[in-house]
Length: 258
Image (tube, rainbow, N blue to C red; front, top):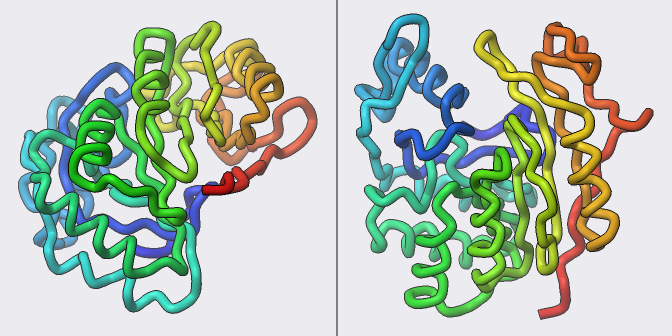
């Protein structure tokens, strides 16, 4: 995969495919359905990664490292923001340390790109970056997903990781996150869930994140309302749009001096 419709990045790169559900934010993950579609299209990398369960697609637990995908960023000459592993989690326990280090080598050797790595397993990210990588690459942004107050401990873990830019994806936002410490967090992405099983988002949940971003100087990016609008009515994602407080928020982080 390369070009993408994800609003906050330019391209996706998937050296790993397949995952497992970690917390409630994973319940309706688009990647499970996408893996099933790619398998139906005969894409070998995605064979056996997801199965049908009732009306849903769910992960089987197979996680696949794709050595051949490591060469892809070298062929992209134009600088891009690259979302790493939109179809998996680089820090999943079934991804080997050796392979993660191979991904890091690619990122170090292609400094014209900015890489955005998002995980629901920030503790392992901290462990590997601190113990086995030991240096900050200015073109690597490290982030964690936080869907509600039950997993805000991921923010404290993220803060421990040495990184040029740390970011949080509050998506799908399925509940209030409450009062959180955004010190050392450079960017926040906020978005509602989409799809037929989508859970509602509340404008007050977005308000509390936005207010805390203003207080901490964290760049704020509002990605979407998703299937449920701010008026709590179900529509298409496109119909609900991206406006929050009367405008579109596309703030991006400024790299700090290293």
